[in-house]
Length: 504
Ligand SMILES: Nc1ncnc2c1ncn2[C@@H]1O[C@H](COP(=O)(O)OP(=O)(O)OP(=O)(O)O)[C@@H](O)[C@H]1O
Image (cartoon, rainbow, N blue to C red; front, side, top):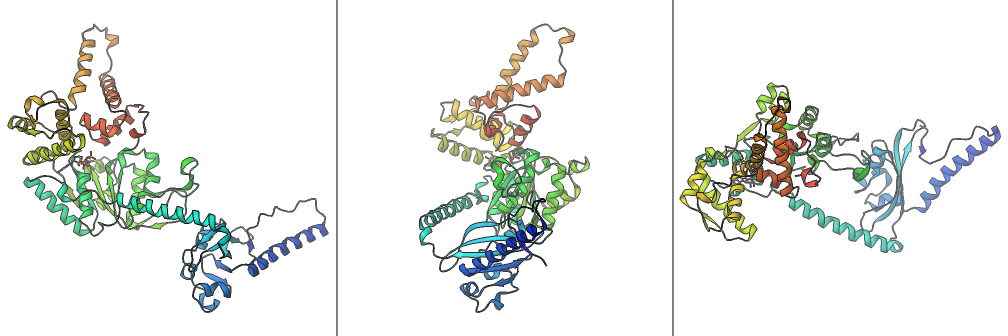
């Protein structure tokens, strides 16, 4: 095989005479050959690998540094088995050189250079590496800085890993009703099984909290818990979000590549919130990733093995979406191995007193205001509410009452006008009523759907403005799920002008 180092020689100019051409060719070949020979003699080590990253040649000095008696002991082995931390495999995979790098080795690191080897057709057939030197004294300032940066990076990664731990356990899921006890029993069972779990339930019922709790009670508890809210991420970014992107797959900020959530969750749990909102093309890719337990970052041609336990959640009727052709049945069955239904608040009203106490305590801690209590009339009123936004809506109502009332003991009177969704809506509706008083000609009558969209647009804009553009907060105030509000913002074409509106 006619292998060549990937040197940047341009093609020969056509105007050369035949003897010149031969001479030029000879000098070029000599240059390549002597370059290898000179480097080989000057370097601390040299090695050559084939396209499978197996060592085909390594010099005596170098192999001894890695504890092998002779080169023959290393030849044929994968390079990583001989030289830990090497990036020769990466050079073979990418076909790109790594011109200057530090290879961590014991007792001292090496300064190394790695070049791909290509055949005449330009196909990568291996790589050659030179350990230029191991005397890092002259490079001490640079190396010292690198070591410091590496330490800082390790600390930042440790902190990030801690943040990725699940935040809640089953004891954080407050409630004493039979429905809640049954839910916790099912959740604990799911934690022991390590299978895919599908959490069903209305918005704000605590599905995310249960997902954290299942992870915390599972054998994966000390590994990452990574969540993705499918509904909150634009379809065009979802694939990268899930599977990552290779360096150079995109221009701009993501030029360096991106690690996907699957990879981040490796060894731990990946929580797919609002999975029913996933676009069909991505559903196929997700299914493949679940079946093969491997992912392919966008723009790369390599696959990464991942072992992540999936907990998916949905507040929509997935079976109905399957029937409508909006959700793949094969993915549905794959996710629906073990389903756990989180009941709505109205079906566990016995939880209300303890939940309210817990939430009021939490509000007092967060706001620094004195902790409020509820009298019997307040509890009675809260029991009669339908709570379409569930615990999230309850929290919102309690927060408003705390902020707007001076009473330490809140009564029904402190809640009557504080329904989170109706207060701003009522204000807007009364303005609409005023307009309605003005006479209309038949031509002025808007289409009903347009009028409703107008109303929603105005209300959401007002809510976002009042919450400084923060979608999660606005959703809470409106008594809507975050996912629902994100979808409405997109559908109604509302400009948010805030990053908080794009990411949860
Ligand atoms: N049983 C509970 N005890 C204490 N807090 C709860 C409980 N259930 C829900 N919450 C709180 O209510 C809020 C909403 O819960 P969560 O986000 O888990 O709901 P969800 O079902 O995932 O909602 P969505 O479908 O809209 O994402 C959170 O602040 C959560 O901590």
